Image 1: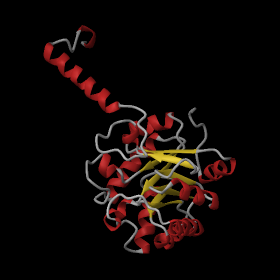
Image 2: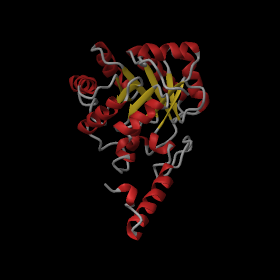
Image 3: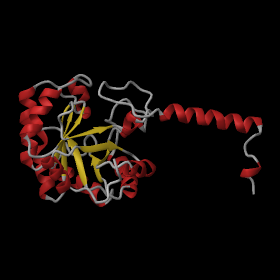
Image 4: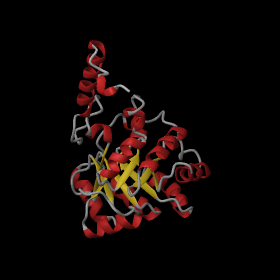
Length: 265
């Protein structure tokens, strides 16, 4: 896939769905990886609250704060010239009150440099989605397996209630969401949702029939040594390569071969 030459917008994504072109999304959390993702021709960079697990080493996304999300979004936005940067609203940044939800969403654009925000939930958060879009903030919805509700769901479980999932998808679309992430949903259900929506669906563990796909960067590059979900495809083993490089560096320093004459002034 070649590097994208034009800025990806909400209009771009709608056109891609209409034309049957697949949307490619991935997470990133800092400037160096944002540059790599940009060069890889990715359409959407999601600054996910997954950073709590893959960057901070926590067991869930729940402890991640707004300040941390704004900081990481700002880093990614500096490295993204054409990809759409979407800031993930962390737990309790939009649930408590409507004014707080709109204010926090606005911070992602104003302070973080994002082009849009993402928030988890279906019908229950449609009033938030509507208020944000009315304030000029593009919103990506997220239904199915929603990690911020891990305790309520009893763990990271596939969601199979087709009637509720379709209703949630239609309601977030009606509330003004420009796209919706479908996570942990059986492929046949995700296909039905995708066919009925006018807005693009972005799948993660939701089969091949979604309008696009998203993966966590550290999972796909082999940088995460924790358990990998079934839906992850590992495209590289950078963790192994980094460990070997560090071992070689340590050996060179200890045996006196680094720095050599070519590294000295």
